[in-house]
Amino acid sequence: MTNVGERQKQAARGTRWTVLACAGVVLGMGGLAAVSAPLYSMFCKATGFNGTPLVGAAPTAPTGEALAPVSVRFDTNVSKNLSWRFQPEQSRVDAVPGQTATVFFKVTNTGPAPSAGIAVFNVQPDLMGSYFVKVQCFCFDEHTLQPGETAEFPLVFYVDPALRKDPDIGDLSEMTLSYTYYPSKNGAPVAEVAKPAATRNF
Image 1 (cartoon, rainbow, N blue to C red):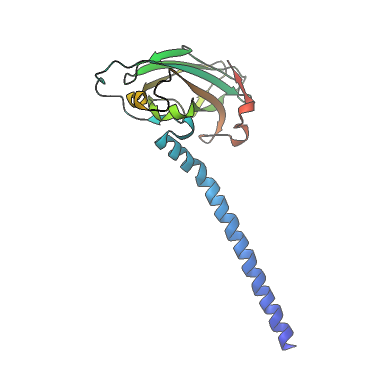
Image 2 (cartoon, rainbow, N blue to C red):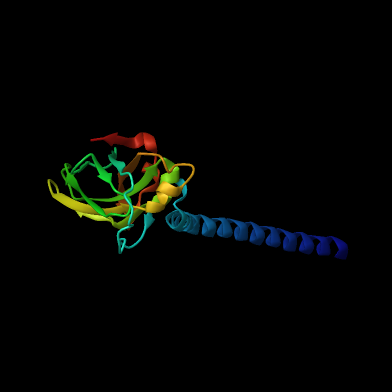
C-alpha cells in the first residue's frame, strides 16, 4: 500500500513538472513573438535588409563628383480595411546621389468615421535599400484623420553616393519606394491586414 501511495505521489509530482515545463515553453514562445517583430525591424533599418531604407542625417557636403542620377519611383497603396486615399505629389524624381530631395504625400480619409493608419515601406530592388537614406519620413508614425480630412506628409531622402561603387547594382538607374497604409491599433499596424493581396493602388 505504501509503494502504491508513493508511486501516486511521484506521478503527481511528474505531472506538475510537466505542466510547469509546458507553461514555461508557452510563455517563452510568447515573449519571443512579442520581441521578434521589433528586433527584425531594427535589424532591417540598421542594415537595409529586405529593401528597408536606412535612416540618417542629410549629407553635409557635396560628393565632389558628378554621379549619374537615380530615378526614384513612388508606389502608394492602402489596405482594403482602411478608407483612405493615398498618393504622392509626384510619381517619380531623379535623385542625384548625395543630394537631398523632398517629396510630399497626400492622404485623405474617405470614410464616414475617424480612422488611424500607419505607413510601412520598402525599396525595390532589395539591394538598393541600403543606399536609400531617409532624413525625414512619416512612416511608422500613427496618423488619425477625421472624415473628409486631408493631410500632407513630407519625405526627405538622399541616395548614398556609395551606390555607384557597388559592383552588383552600381549601374542601376531606377528604384521604387513603396508605401502601404494599414489601419493601426495602439501605434502599430493591425497584424491581420498585413497581407500584400489586401491592398489597392491609387
